[in-house]
Length: 94
Image (cartoon, rainbow, N blue to C red; front, side, top):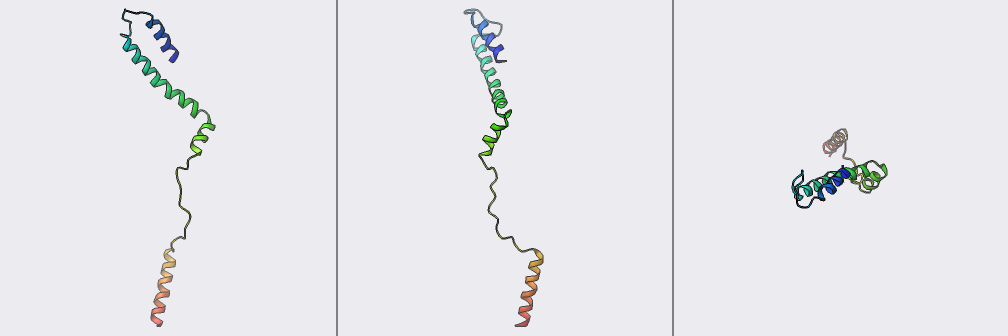
């Protein structure tokens, strides 16, 4: 795609004062910019995504989720009921 674009630029760029089939020189510049705009992301994606080592290198350096350290778990509902019963027994005995 990029080679074809360069060939068009070479052949059309040789004509100095005549209009090309693509329009003025600004039109050719726009086509060139669009070609670069389309091909650069494709080449970068192919280069980085096609090599698993690159993905591990870039994605492995960052921890996306950081969990807090494990703390004491809150008591289960059964434990809470048992504690409530013990507290009620202590109140009744006193």
